[in-house]
Image 1 (cartoon, rainbow, N blue to C red):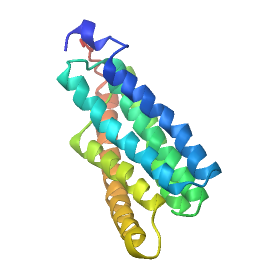
Image 2 (cartoon, one colour; image 1 turned 30 degrees about the vertical axis):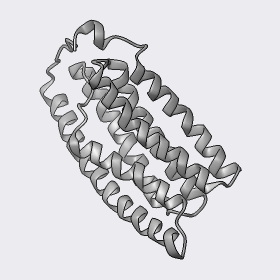
Image 3 (cartoon, rainbow, N blue to C red; image 1 turned 180 degrees about the vertical axis):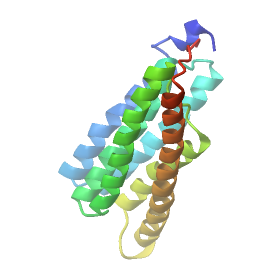
Length: 195
């Protein structure tokens, strides 16, 4: 990716990412105000699908950008935060899950700010980080339509399986990013980002 390409803002993947961001308030209204769990399920499923799609399109069209690299994980975090808070408000998941995810993200925001100051870079997204996000983004739609019988019971089982793996991987990647960020802080080396 050339510097010119990496600095581009108006790209197809970035537009898809911004459209995906619009799904966050739509989900909150559909789930908390309209009490439409099936509609909420489809909004989250569409958000997860477009998360996969924007990255594929960026690579296929050679439209990877610094904005996209920063915006995509931020939108993922916003989806996860909005969904876990909404599910906790409706007593679908316990508040301790919200607390674990929020504390992890706040801690990493501090570590990332220090890492960025020392190196001039963002953390490179790891395979485990993608797996953690995948698990959480797929867990919550299932929990929206979970119930006590039949297919809704199966959705609940699948949703909780994704939650357990997702939270575990989320914490594991948080440790990995923390080690990377704190190591850079100790060495004090600044790396110039050349695009």
